[in-house]
Image (cartoon, rainbow, N blue to C red; front, side, top):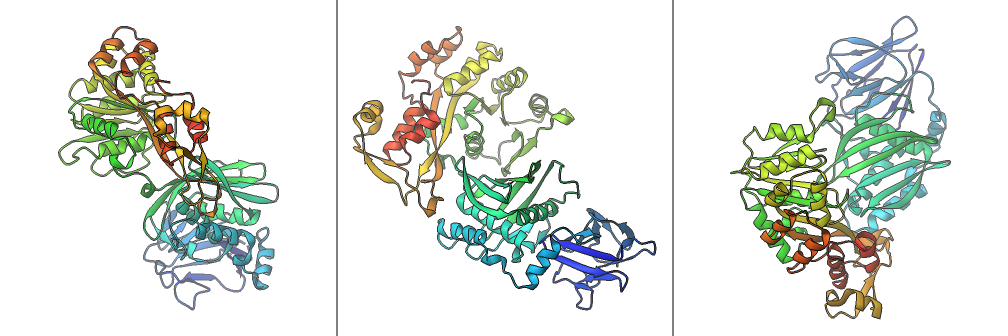
Length: 547
C-alpha cells in the first residue's frame, strides 16, 4: 500500500505517499495531518509502512487512545486495511487504499473553488428553515453532533457537503417538529422527505454523492462497523441544538439505488409536559386527575400507533408524587426518560416480555405500574389483578374507540368480573393536524355541515380550511392537537359488563352522562378553528362509541 487515502467523516479526502514518510496525526502543527481538535493529543498516532506492502496504525501514547474500528489502542500498533475506521480525538477517518470512486472529481471541484453553499438544494433547505416559526431560531446553524458513545464532535460545523446537508436536515426537522427524516436514493438524486404532523412532506433533492456522504457521517456517529452497502444497519446518535438535545434512532436499509436512511427524531421538547397541556376538556381533565390520585385501579388509553397514547400516560404519571411513590414502567422501547421513575425496556430475545417483566416488577414493591401495551391474555390478566390488589396500573391497547377497548379485553378471555372491577376509565384518543394560523381561510358553513355538527357548532357560521404557506411547509397545517373520548366506569356500567354486554347496552348507559365521541370532539375543535372537517373525517370519521 504505497498510496494511502483517508476520507474524513465530513467528506474530505486526504492523500498521502507512504513511500516518502510516515503519516503523523495530531494537534501539533508539524504533524503530517494537523488537527484543530482539543480532544486529540499533540502527537496522537502514526500510519506507517509495515515493510511488507501493508500499513500499520501505531498509537503514540495519546491521552485518550486511538480507536481502530471502535477498539481502543494505547501505545500499541495494529495493521490496517481499506475500509477500516480510525478515530483520533473527535475526528473519524476511513482508510482507503486506492483513490475512492468520485474522489478525484470532488478534489477537482474543490480545487476549482466550487462552493457547496451555492447549490440549489442548500438554498432550498436554508429558505425552508428561515421561513418556519419562530423567526430567527436556527439561523446561526449551530448544531453539535454527539456520537453513540456520548462524545461531542465539531464535524457539523464545516461547509463540506455531507456535514452541511445533515446539519440543515436536522435543523429543518427541529423547526418543523418532524418525527422522521427520510433520505431516499433514486435514479439521479437522493430525495429528502420529513414526516411532519403524521404526513410525509417532500423537502428537496440532494445529489446522490452528497446523500452517500450524509450516510457516511451518520455511520461514523453511530460507531457502525464498516460493512457492505447491502447490510441492514441500526444505531443511534444525538445532536445538541442551541436550546436542547435531540436523540435519533437510525435505520439504514439497502435499496435498488443505494442505501435508504431513516432517522426517527426523539425530541422531548415538542411533547406536552403536563396533563393540562394535552387539551382535554375540563370534565375529562378532572376525571383523569381523580383517577391518578387513587391508590389502585386500571387506567386504559386506546388508539392506533402514533396517536399519542404514551405521551398521555407519561403526563398522567407526572400528576403523581414521584418522591413518595415507587413508579415503574415497562416499555417497548423506552423512548423518553421520565425523571423519578424506574423505566424497563422489554427484550423478547432475552425472555423479557411484558408479562414476564410485569410479574418481576410486582415483586419490587411498586405503587404505580405503567405497562406499555396489553398484547396478550397473560399481560392483561396480571395487570388487572395488580389493579385490584393495591396498585395503580396504566396501560394502552389498540382499538378504534373506548367501547371497543372493553371488548378487546373481553376477547382476550379476561373474566368479566376482572374487567368490571379493575377499570377506572378508558380514554380513546387521536391526533388531528392543527390549521396553520398564518394562512388558514374562513368559509361559510353549508346547511349539511350545520345539520351534521348540530350543537357542536356552538353557534358559529364559519369554519376554517387549510391553504398553505412557507411557515407550514405549504401543507396548511402546523402541529397537531388531540381529540378525546372518555368512558367513565360507573357502577351501572360495571353491572352491564358483568352480564355479557353488547355495544347497544353500553351505549345506552354511557349516553346518559357527558360522553362525547372522538368525532364529536373533532367537530368541537373544528368549530373553534383548530382544525378542519376534512381532517376530522380522515382521522375519526364514522368512529366513536356513540356515533
